[in-house]
Length: 563
Image 1 (cartoon, helix red, strand yellow):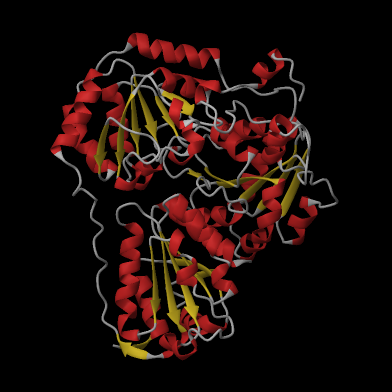
Image 2 (cartoon, rainbow, N blue to C red):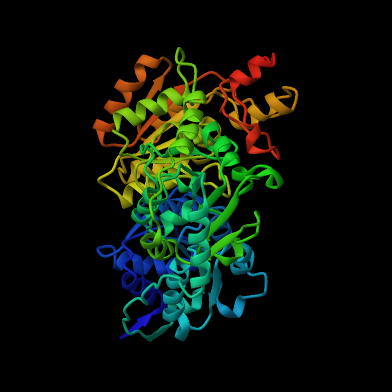
């Protein structure tokens, strides 16, 4: 079948099972958008307000569904506006295919209008990048891009197609997508036996769960592993929902804003089993003091992560689901009453707390958890609100929590929420943002209203850049350089101006009825929750300190610190 390059792109997307694409048109990609118009009954394109929003929407769609997210942009600034979204997906291992169009092949390298080497620009933040200037290679390149994005450790791939290729014609033959095989070639019996020996010898094991468990769809195998090892479980920000947050063995997040039970427990364990986690600096704190009393067993699909940040005593390199499948039959359950009682004592002694007399971020999120029965998909931006969402909403299932972890991208949330909702129309989807983050992406509320995507946007509004200001308060002598946002921006009026229903909350008693009404509307809603500018996220570990030095607000008060 003789087709144009643009039609070949559409057919390849259909081959891969793509139903939704996020993007923004422009001159060099016009042929592709013309083909989209012809195939609008088979492939739905969502026009975002900004290309960055398209990348974040594709990312949110991918994280919440497990499928590949797809975004599109034109050359030059259109392509470069995708970069932050591509970097976000790369840092958090999200399968994404970004399709861009470039100037025609004869114009490449001549500083032509809107010519940017986007493959070169994104080389450090993609699994692979392709520039297609030969139509005979177009279909196979797109197929390979989808395979690369999903195989092994997932990640983003960019395909840049010259405009002449989008308009040329070539013979197209439909092909079935290449099966994604689980990465197992580096799993050795020696590594498995060593892992089993470490587990058998441990008296006080602790399990650290990362996002790799979710990427591998290994939550069922993880639950069996935890039950057999009979150990407490903590998670990284990216690992939320991989293990049921309501399980009695779950102790909460670890790291800079992790629970004291998780941080102190890991410091006292004799074996730390890290599964699909990369030992980020926000998790381990001071690497030289991390889990000093423990041997460390690391299970991960990416060999580059082994011994990168933390030296380990054992490793199994391979797909997490496959590794756990091979380990589980050989683990004998051991009763650990004394160890589990010790960790339970840490939880009872150091619970998460907040001011229950005032309207606070934690109160809003706990109420949201209650109103949604813990079944919503929660997306976030980055900052204090993000940590509160991680601490005070209990995630029972994988792919319930969608947040920018590695890149820490302010402006991620609304686009991600749109993508997550479009991939999960049966779920309530709520984005939690601070006012600083919402300023960066609130134009995407117009996208939600354009397509009537019923997302709920909660703005935890303290009129400051909360997390940065928290650091300035604690470590910079209260020198609030450019973190105060108090001005005349009215988020309710802005939201209404973009066609959304909007509410302002200033009292605790308003939270529950507003949330219930927002959910019942089944329409785009923005809720402006105004909290005190001095509210902080605790516990906290200072940058570079040991996680054993986690401190709370009560600890600061005992030392005579005034906020």
